[in-house]
Length: 107
Length: 299
Image: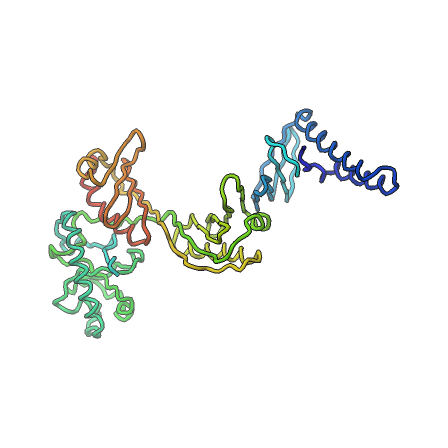
């Protein structure tokens, strides 16, 4: 059972919307939609762990708040600079939600 | 009020301070206390016409009173005996109000303060204060960790929420029983203020938090005597108080009996004092150790 962390991403949200549409048109059952989402969780976790090679670093001006509960870290950063090789992106506010990479849990 | 012991930093050499052995120092303190009490009883009578402190004007009084207050020693620097009264810098009325008339020692061998080995005004700085308070109600730690900012809760590792605030910069351990430990403050007032802020946060989350039995449990201070110290010599002569194991820890651990303070003494001359419940104990412990350290100065 993998983290359902990635359901709230652009990819995960569009998947959920599509599934909801299909359910509305009666073309799939909700049961099937749940199975699809669970498979999505597994696939995205595996893909990110194995098929993604890019390295991204970031540095923030300020750590506004932090939280650690249920083994999940949530950070709110201000004035952040993301760097990857030669590319750079600056953002005012960033929210980071991080789950434990070592142990696997369904959320 | 039985902690009325000298605080460092106000002996004035011009008085002609006598040489003084550290052991005498400790014996005389009760004597000083007696005199202090005498002085206090004689305080209510109005000051003399002189612009001196009322205490100083009476001839039979000896000048070794020490401020019972636990405030910083600088506040105690005041003119001394009538003979060499330098300037009436302090208004008598305010001094009477505070009751603590500081007079550095007269040139009599009975003075507990101002031996020639008195510290030249070094005052230990407080580095950390640990305090506890009871919020008086059971707490739901998960709810606190989820809704409060800057909180950590890992029940597998530790059964409390670890919360931090930036002003005063402190860390609190909050337990489900409603008890809380506040660490990291640099002064007693800061510790109390920080604890109140944490209690306010808990209150805002919907718990009926109170502020019961606030107590400072430990105070840590540090200072620098500015000369290197022969720790080996110190452990030889003060064997029953010291423990020095350089292979384990580079500092000498000195367990002072009165006041009950533990000092970590390092070769560099830096000293850490811990175990105090009140600020005055730190100052007192340093006053006691300074002449000893001076005698073990590395030449």
